[in-house]
Length: 536
Image (tube, rainbow, N blue to C red; front, side):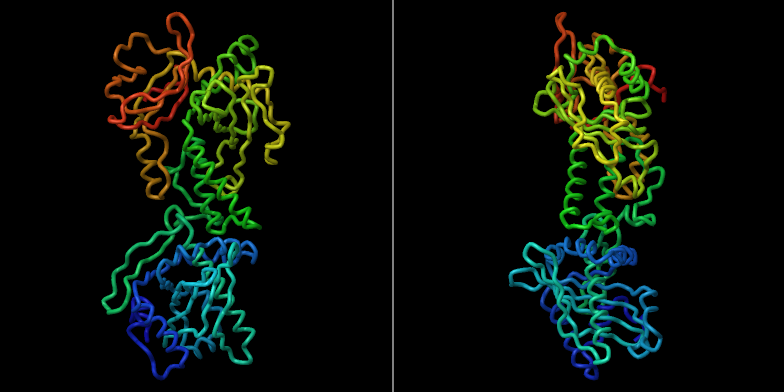
């Protein structure tokens, strides 16, 4: 039967029916397929070539890390109903067989299909896989059944039933069957991984009894990857801020783990990496982000280097702008190695005037989205002592310093003074200006990122703190110099700050303002001095 006769393998198997001239095992396997199709709905899927390519990376791993990836596949969830999975055979797989062997079996193998069912009952989950194929001149169905049983609290155990090999090919046949088992489970590992694949409908078959086919293919951004498996992003989609870059890093790192590009020697190590990745992503989402403009960061660095008086008084008034905040800056001497920095800082309790802790991410000038930058992201844990002025403002506990950081390159006192200057700037009274962000500047990047299923950049609005140019008093019914009246203002969170009232300095705690009826605003804070502003 020619390869162009049928659009899919299952269509050919259903249309041809049982063959009275074929071996008994062939018809027995076909009867299992026909019975499954008749019994109820079957999910029919055709795998694209890029899915097979991704699975081959897992196949070629060493036994131990590959088994860790396979054992993590939740086949019970994947197989809520029987699954038919078919795919075209790559040319290199046929090259492994000699021409004489191909001719003896009906020619070159064109397509392969797997009937995957879940066996009910027993102590563990058991998955049964039967293999079918299409060659140039004929169809084939293996008598063997691959059984994968999930052990309680453990991984999958393989047994192969109904093995039947010629006496002189027993060892070769068993080795091939186990090699096929690795290929089957590696393919299911890609299908079961979150975010890596997507399903699209294909044109339904006109032949009766053939289930509607879906095509599974790698989902963006995994459709275009470099030699290390990292998605290749066009310049328009690349982030400008450390905050967005790290969010991309965490998303891609998770995908690299699921795809086997970043593998682990133990299942616990793999599980821990996924938990850390997810936790850091959620941590950044919870933080209110600030970006220090160059002149402000430079001013804070100068104060940290040269200012001697006023530091103790400033520390007594110190507070966080929010219970959890993100602050990033670049290209200054802040006492830490690196060229770009992002910091999550969180109050230890509800009191933003109390002690805090956090993590700093130090990046080079242009890390970009590369395998080394993604897998090499390290955080530097610190404590911020606000209440106890006898302690250093910032402390880096040695037990939490990762190996990638050189303790000799960290100037703890200088960084403490730098952070004191930054937080003091953030809490200056009457220095707030709210502006709608010019969405036109971000539309091209977000469009390119949406095409690759990446999170959009930035936020809806920007809050600028004008350190050297306080907003004029007497704004009347308008708030923050934005022209927004309170009655039309969307619900938004207001940072903590100091203000003078009735001749006294008082602290205003972070709070919510506005009305949810007018929408909810998620903002990005850009801290800048008046001379930093660029006319657009």
